[in-house]
Amino acid sequence: MKLIEMAGAIVAPEARYIAEARNHLDSLTKPIGSLGELESIAARMIAIGRGHVELPLKKAVYVFAADHGVTEAGVSAYPKDVTAQMVLNFLNGGAAINVLARLHDAALTVVDVGVDAEFADALGLYRAKVRRGSRNMAREAAMTEDELDAALQVGFDLAEETLAKGETLIAVGEMGIGNTTAASAITAALTGQPVETVTGRGTGLDDVGRSRKIRVIHAALGLHFPAPMASVDPVEILRCVGGLEIAATVGFILGAASHRRAIVCDGFISTAAAALAYAIAPKVKSYLFAGHRSQEPGHRHLLEYLGLRPILDLDLRLGEGTGAVLAMPVIAAALRLYSEMATFASAGVSEAGVSEAAG
Image (cartoon, rainbow, N blue to C red; front, side):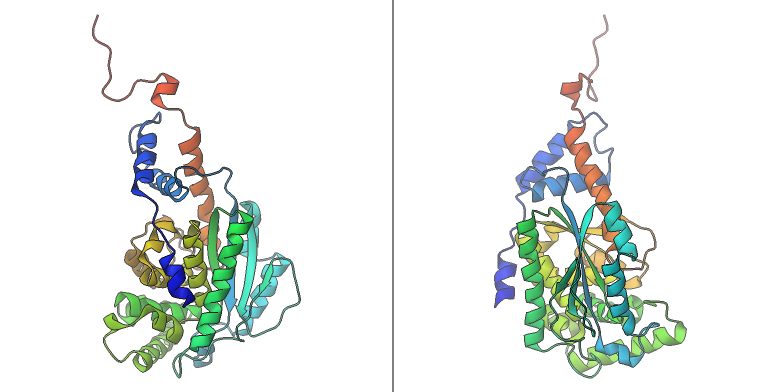
């Protein structure tokens, strides 16, 4: 199975690269540790690059789009037509992710893996439709095994393209009305947290709508996983209560990690995909950065599950990859500081604890 092969191909960066990077950071003209989390980011990036990262970074953002059959249960404040409408907005350059990708020089690719519409060829569109939306998870599995395999393969194939393009910092985002329902179900299944704890308002549900969403997720989990959740295979969680764009993102993250690419997760949905990838192949964590912490309550539980500290915390809940792209300049800044600051020795600056003898 390609998934097993891909998971087995992921190798964590060697610990010596982290140690060497930390030693270099400690030699720079600053108090030890004074750049805080920037030092951890720089050290991790250097380790991913096996001791070196080419600057400037070649940045890219991939937005995976698909519809969800569960929207027929009334779990979203917006109709499912908005998925296709927003994909067109991306392709026309008018969405938030377009603005941020232009600003931060990140090449944008929109991946149609399951939108319930057809699109004309357009610059930046990657056509890879598996089917026109997933099935209603509250009534049947969201995907068949063949559909899951096909969606994963979309991600694997795109990861190969990042290697061919020489992209070194990759953001993952998504678009799909109904996908916070899928992400909440995934989060409850993976973390063991109550559905009520990890389910938010998504696109802006009122109290009645959120209560209905919680009931739908309970129904889906009860239908597919009557046994204790701790025994559930993460691949089955993905197949039964995930979505086509989430599956493609899982494949993409696994593939990109196997090619030693740094991956910046966006919000709740892309982090749910990252958490599934981590459950399948724990070594993937070495390549993951959390771009930000979303307003969605389940997101913080996923970050805790992954053991990742978010780079930004701006109360975002837009998706599209916006938070991940916003974090890219912070990662770039960490690497510039690492590469361009003088050392105590080169600058002729005395280190801590070094003083001249009294004369």
